[in-house]
Length: 405
Image (cartoon, rainbow, N blue to C red):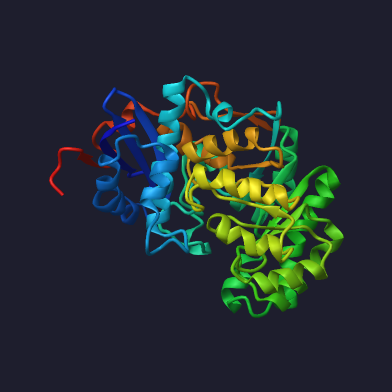
């Protein structure tokens, strides 16, 4: 599989997103993507990765992953890792197209007939502008028209019971919210006041009062807290029986997470910011998590993600792939989960799926009745819409195998 051209596209409507198109000498096009810091990733793809890809006589996913493994940057989900992941996803897409098979079959599946979803309660403008995970990047109060109908972040902050009921009525039986983040930002995770704790708990209580235990409730803490304060929050949440608490501390605080896990009966989910097997292994060995929330992009691609999933399975730990990024990644997550016996549940963001995903691509996996299914088309099944490939709404850059480097 010889790569002759690489095109990158940054949609102006979603500046954090980078699409990567790989074109082969026999006319196929594979689609990958990266999320966060799209300009840095784009520079890496064209200025570093392109040379390696063009020189490969057969750019298989495993061969490319080995060839592109960086000397610097491999310990974190930086531009190199995210660029390699976008390339890896495009190569898997090409492999599926060439074989005439959807990715879940190439990965050895299916092992299930259905996959439950939960809804991350973000809005369409969430983390749209900058590569920062903070309340300044929540995108609130900027939406008009149809987008405003999916402002789930504002809804969980101001009318959580209504939101829980709306999701449940649509067949969605899991929801993720982050009611303590602002308090965490103000104290830098060192303390939470009684008033801030009760304010966050009132949101959780409103959900329980409206729908009881019919809704699995995930509480996201975004790695903002030190261990004593995280323990205090988990203790206060215990009566509400969360399905899990996610990232109560940074994922690299392995010893602290291990101690925290031993102190609580609440399941702990960690992993979206851990990179590869070497990032997951210490957490698994320390018994620091109950669910591994692997991110296919940030861990280095589908090639690495399936190995991480198998590693987690050997420890008896389920995976719940993270997706609060882009449509091709969501598709790849679903293909991975359909092929892995330890897949538990799939994260989705209905505010993304029903707004900007729909504007940019076709062939996304369909959520129906609280479940999601992969495309049966060859590859991952997601294609860019013609308007994205046109001029005016996107920034584009192209490298070809004949370029001087």
